[in-house]
Image: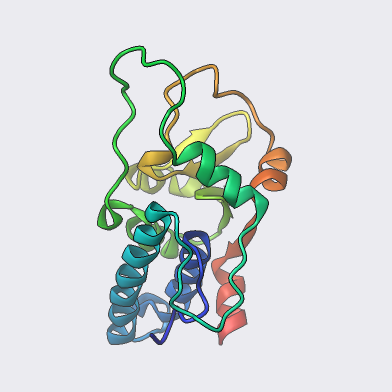
Length: 196
């Protein structure tokens, strides 16, 4: 493992992939062979972490590393990944959990790398987009992003993060979302200055 040695969970993996994609992508001055090698390693590590998360086990790839999980991650795993404890009211419209290869994370990163002036902010498993989004409206729609009108920001979420129950949905300010899920904010220009 060359690129993802210190990764212990899926959020760290996705964040590290985004950083490396900005660094290694051929359109940003990187090498195509290194980028494809990094993508292949991402797929292997993703499958391993997804399998370990599904079994309820911590990843033991880094035996000597300190493996901690936060209270929020434990609660999220307990309430969002476990079976429903409520009564069954009929078939649900919610899609089954996505396969690791169908995550869509590769596709959205590939699109966002090429858009100038977009600020990417990862909050949990969602990506929030701000900055000069009006110039790139068509590209964002084609990539599967949606507009949150009250926030005046675009967002992208994995397919299994969709909520079909209107009572669970509701307006949450960005300050609330950042506080609850954490936030990693990155622009392409800052990434290029950081790595080069």
